[in-house]
Image 1 (spheres, helix red, strand yellow):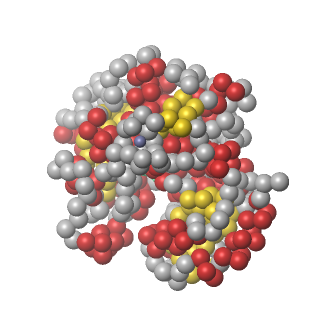
Image 2 (spheres, protein in one colour):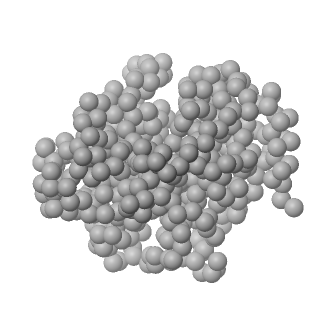
Length: 428
Ligand SMILES: *Cc1c(COP(=O)(O)O)cnc(C)c1O
Ligand SMILES: [Zn+2]
């Protein structure tokens, strides 16, 4: 890799401290989310595979040989249906007819690729990821492709969502009875074992900048920043990422100087960020408590949108992104999401992830409400889709847990196995 392409530092936007990348995901003074500061102030789209064409603004030095990346195109049929003249669809999933090759069918693979590579380049050790579905599958697929090992902690009900399209021996998976939060707690206990590194979630600049390539692909296709960025959110990381990349594109100078307004949505009945934002509250207050929100979350059609502890309040998090972009957050009912998904499939011709259906419904609502003008430049982030298209071309190879543990377990019963397994990956 040409060295000038890989140059960046980490920077805390709050205390302005800069530091080299030792796989740190936090400012030493813990001010808020840290960012990557890239030496390239203007974006050059590189001749590299998939999302790595945006290498200038990814915190990695090399790349992974994967053709996974966003594909943005101007909508004709859905646009006509909605009376919009500048609707651009950023598709993240599998749709070979459009050159879209994300085989795990969601934009989580755009997080997994640079995150896995960044750890390999800077930290060493083995990544630990807790997930009930799209994220775990994305990291497993990247591992199958790159041989970068990963340890997954998955709630029992999520195990069926974890598959790859290539055989892999570098994924160690545990299933935990209980919900996603129980899997996270078990996963955290694994990170007490030396050499097991937490992936860091939204704090990890590689995850955010990986997701932010959706906005870059949209802007490069439109040759300008959009007026609106539409996305369905659970953690809000994609919204934060779109905001951060927009700031870089404004500094670039060739894409306009107005931030896109974030138009984000959640799926009823679990809408904590929409509720907080609509009262302009920095803190998510749930008067009903953890148990009720656990129940509500289980009731949601688009399950990936139910993060119970999102990076909303943290400095540099979603509240700040919405404030800076004059953002809007809405809630969508499940029947509306399903009919929007059908409209999308009938007009554009591909099946969607339920979360993406929620997003299409929010666009329909925004048009009906007159929130957007008919000639506004709109980037619609289709965060997942093409599952039915994928099975025409690939097998979904299931992964099996090496142990199933009761909720509340710690690393005790699996520690020896993990320590042995880690020896396969020690640096020579
Ligand atoms: C994770 C996910 C989302 C939500 O993304 P965040 O930006 O992390 O809130 C939306 N759609 C799909 C398909 C996802 O997998
Ligand atoms: Zn700081």
